Amino acid sequence: MRVPMRVFLFASLLSFGTFAMAEARTRPGSFADLAENLSPSVVNIQARYAVSESKRRGGLKFEFRAPPGSQLEELFRQFREQQQGQGGQQRRRSRSQGSGFVIDSKGLIVTNNHVIDKAQSILVVLQDGTRLAAEVVGTDVQTDLALLRVKHDKALTAVSWGDSDKARVGDWVMAIGNPLGFGGSVTAGIVSARGRDIRAGPYDDFIQTDAPINRGNSGGPLFDLSGRVIGVNTAIVSPSGGSIGIGFAIPSRVARTIVDQLDRHGEARRAWMGIAFQPVTADIAAGLGWKASRKAAGVIVSGVAPNSPAARAGLRNGDVILAYNRKKVTRDNRLPWMVAQTPVGKTVPVEILRAGKRRVLTLKVARMSEERLASTRQGGGEKKRNRDGAVGGEKEAKKVTLSAIDVEVVALTGAIRSHNKVPRSVAGLLVVKAGIEAREKGLQRGSLIREINGVRVDSVEAAGLALTKATKEGRKAVLLKVSDLQGRRDLYIGVPLKKSS
Image 1: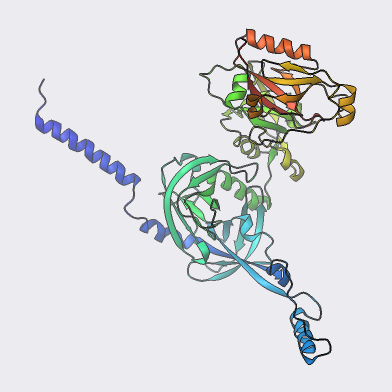
Image 2 (image 1 turned 90 degrees about the horizontal axis):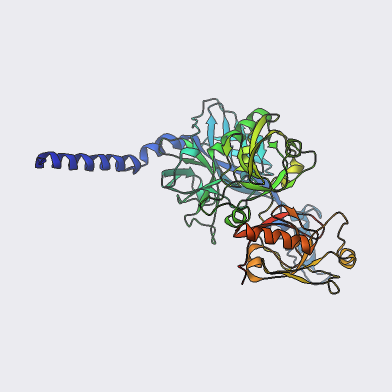
């Protein structure tokens, strides 16, 4: 059937029109309306500090000297006493500036903790120049958030939170703030990436944007095109201190929960499960025997705190957590936040993989104390390489090569235990030499191999049997559980198996 030309042209024009309308929706001709409507909600924050003269000068003290007994010496003495207050140290006022935004018309303002940390006084400057003294409602160091309150005889213009989870890479965003002291500055860009871990803390999950962010933008809002806050600008990467197009914002999903807690309690109250863990990398997945077609996901438990919620739930070292509270664990930096936002005392299902079988454990989270924050996450053993450890007492020990993984090991002798203070309760094989590939994966001299594929290896024979079994099963790699000689800091490493000649 022949299609009339006019129908074809109409269809083509319709398609082009649809494309043009879609492009118009995603690429605004101007941000002027958004900026005009939202700017009154963004404030300049001035934090004031008392700084000693020596600190202000970087710790250096400058002293004038004159000939002893001269009139000039007496003049300098009087000058110093006047400046230092009869021997006391001169103190001056120092000020730092940042940004913030109003989330409640009654005077609640969100900013970064580092903008107001340890300030003696805080001043909030509105768009119209009104200056208001602010009090701190609460702060959270871990997420770098702070909530302030000001009193004003008029209702303030507030903004609303948006849904950062709906923000896609490539979406337009707009930032308003006080960069370098230039208040009311508007910049625009796109979402460059999501879920960025910049090693700022245990709850890293930043939005990366190329919207120009500079010093003074900290604490300011990152808006989507609907005018809702999807992020709190908090950090930049720059060798010079200026914007190079790599800025980071705390997602609203994180910020909103913390801010609500600061408003209700004056502090952030987090849940805790009590584990150390690592991401399941491709190497670890291979060591677990996963098929190449299966994408690495979840986290592997490398430590369980005694008497913790995880211990009571039955979690063990080597368990792979696939889902928490019915939500998949897709990245290691998401799990701490998934746990932290769980209401304290709530019981949640935790789906794990143990010895190749899926199980669901029931875990009741507890409240995390500040002392436990440091142990919420192990610092990624495969991301940090330590130098080969010093080992004593191994000269007389019999060295054996585990050719399947290209490492040379010795059993723990009395001399090795004595020289290195190895507890009697710690068993394993000491690595005295590792091949290039094993070293690249994180195995090194001084490492103690505790397990191979979940099997405890306290002798060379046990290690040989575990490696032989893995080879017969057709595995591409083995999963090693290693630690230091004191049995601390357990770490899982996936090491490829060498093909037998």
